[in-house]
Length: 302
Image 1 (tube, one colour):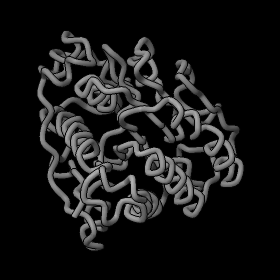
Image 2 (cartoon, helix red, strand yellow):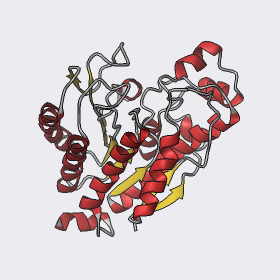
Image 3 (tube, rainbow, N blue to C red):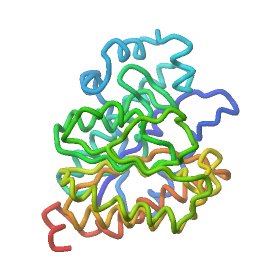
Image 4 (spheres, rainbow, N blue to C red):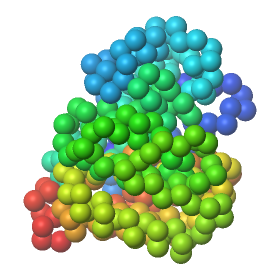
């Protein structure tokens, strides 16, 4: 049975009315547990040494000690707490563990991670440390990052910009956060209101370029904030469109024999059940392709 890592055992105190949908993580885990296909395990904590492979040691220390200034914490978007430190380490640790699973079996997943707005020496947009960049530095493998969150993976693009062994791809809203974009290896900007057909056409045009890069592993940032009901998304995808998006990604990885790591990314729909259903659909799509594959060597017969 494939496994997924979760972080909702690390609760963080947020003020009433905070816009970050912290409840989605436990709801998603509970839904996937009830379906019974995946084995759910608490994510292990990353170490400080893991984090410092991608981040400024001075920034890491200040976050650990709670001495970042108020401006830096406002940019992150969370109040500092010991619980936030623990949650952040487990989020990064879940991605590291999922990456190891992917290299051994072809697929790995975490019900957290995707903190793609974190830069070398600062956090942003609910992201403290960049788990994808940390995992890539740790693995030292040729890698592609396929970021389909509605917000550009600006921190990931910046952190990995000078690494010729990494291809960063971001398909995102042109007029959405972050308003100062970075340069990914491939950027696809979408107009407000983009729907299923246009989105899937743009994605289908990009995927062969990812395959041609011949990565040894793909990190799939599978945010679902492109959903029409998302408060922060500004696109107009349906649940079916997002599911078909996921199928395209997994089909490409399977056909090219590329291990894939799924990180959760964003989702801010109202009601929250819409976000939970969209995230669950990503792992249902993965099940269609990776069910019955015991080792990555079996993928060649698919």
